[in-house]
Length: 173
Image 1 (cartoon, rainbow, N blue to C red):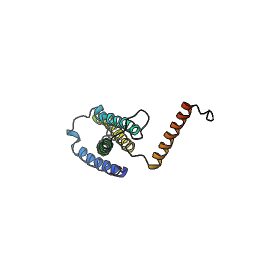
Image 2 (cartoon, helix red, strand yellow):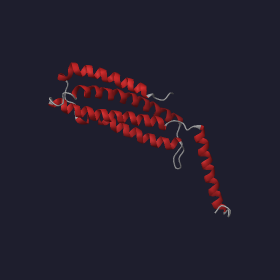
Image 3 (cartoon, rainbow, N blue to C red):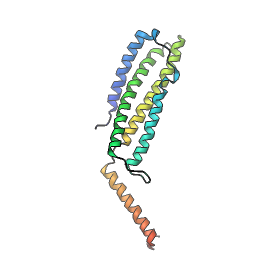
Image 4 (cartoon, helix red, strand yellow):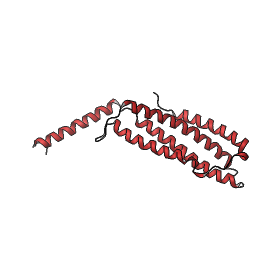
């Protein structure tokens, strides 16, 4: 599985923005008002994915007090992260397209001012989802061999120090 490339997300977001701008330009008068918290759900999902990334990162690195992580769980988390990143990029593009259309009109049209605020909130929250998804994907990477060796050496040093304290090695303390 390859990591998500930011270029792919940018292309998808820009494509969605162009499509949204064209659609909004043709149909804005027939669209209902966009509620201000319309995009907040994506922000909440982004925060949840970032928190899940931190939890999984500790389990993958086998931090003290954490259970080991099954490889299939990590693979599923990566798939969710990649899908969320792409979905967030697409929705961010849609909100950006709306924002590009309504922002210049927000000074003269009351509905456009309200929709501009909704689009800004939606755009920020969709970008939050992309950020949370990319963080989750990064946290699910397997540690490098050098990291594993360093962690193993650190664990062995901790065990030796504990054994020395337990057996009363006078040369160490």
